[in-house]
Length: 231
Image (cartoon, rainbow, N blue to C red; front, side, top):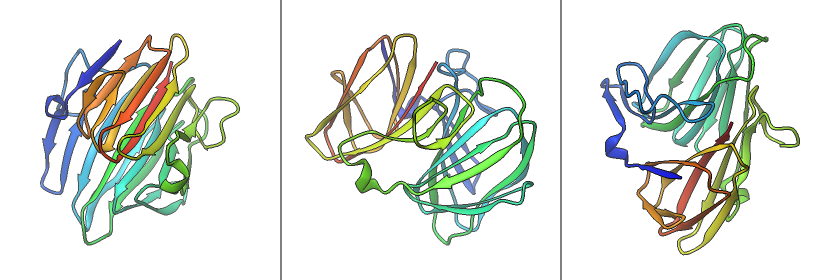
């Protein structure tokens, strides 16, 4: 089963400093048919104006993964962590029993990113934060795990039986991903048109997938892919 969700069909919110598209119900956007996909609860496609961002606010019991597409984002939290995550790199925050954080674009230009929220396997636990560089050259022609709670994966840790993976694929090339029975995949091309098991998608469209043991992705253009695999 493959459900193609064109970018134009997503929820949209324009706040001046923030231009956001919501793949799933979030804030003022509510669609009972799009409340999540497996343990994936939120996938926001955000464009944040320079010298602006999200001031301090709380979270709890959520695994929050930020994939920066262009620009950079600066994180501060109540645990004392401070970090700047640049385009192509990833940060992860386990909210656990509760944390306050801010995410600010301190650059002069617009920052674009995907913010992905995954439900943890269990509530509670101490909050945590981390970031890592993931050079696009290392992801060329293959999926690389960016964040994971699946035993054996080497990546930023999350507290969920889920994996966030990324790949870059040159135009005309094809890669594949094996999806285990009972699991859900959600795929977005940050840039470049792609074809998934014969279904064509534009950049930033959402592709919800289950009961497809082999996901075959052909890059029509040079493509940058992000995929979440969860129960």
